[in-house]
Amino acid sequence: MKPNRTLVHYLCLSGIVALVLYLLHDVIGGMLYPGYDRASQAVSDLTAISAPSYVVASGLASIYGLFSGLSSALVCIVVQGKGSKTLRLGIYLFAIMNWVSAVGYSLFPLSASGYAGTFQDVMHVYVVTVAVVLLSVISLALIIIGGLRGGARHRSLAAWAIMALTGMVIGGAGTGIVPAAYFGIVERFSTYGAVAFTAVLGVYGFRAFGDPERRPAAGS
Image (tube, rainbow, N blue to C red; front, side, top):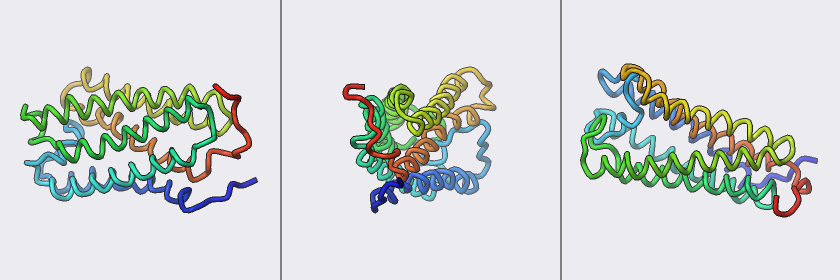
């Protein structure tokens, strides 16, 4: 039996819009940044205050943050009473991560490409980024564990979470291993992993996470 979809379910698909906006901020931002090299430069260089692409790229990134926050928050509503407590906790933490990312990076963009060591650079790299990474890893791990305990649909979500977490691990470890000329490539594994999973989570929210009567035992 198909779930009755409401406006909340349809708005969960704003996660897909967020993915498109993030891709546009990367592509259009790079076009407006003479000499920008995606292979070696981070995505955040496009929204650095001194970057030629700052106005357009930061605008698109801010709108992306709103849509990703909206989608993940609505998924938190849809998931009520569905899946295990572990799965729901993971989704809640992932939503918090999206809002920390949206607000934190908007308040503290890099002052210049790379790392110039200013106060906002410290906040960007050592406060916001660390918080986003920790919340991402913990939330995805919980979604994996909780999803594997659920039905087929929840297990498929766990598979997507595994792919997203793998991308983040590759990105995090790779940036310290690969030559500087390839920094931007591995860094995008991490950033796009989280962004893509937001879109995936939005689709699951739209699909209402399966039939509400299929619930795990209490305390699972």
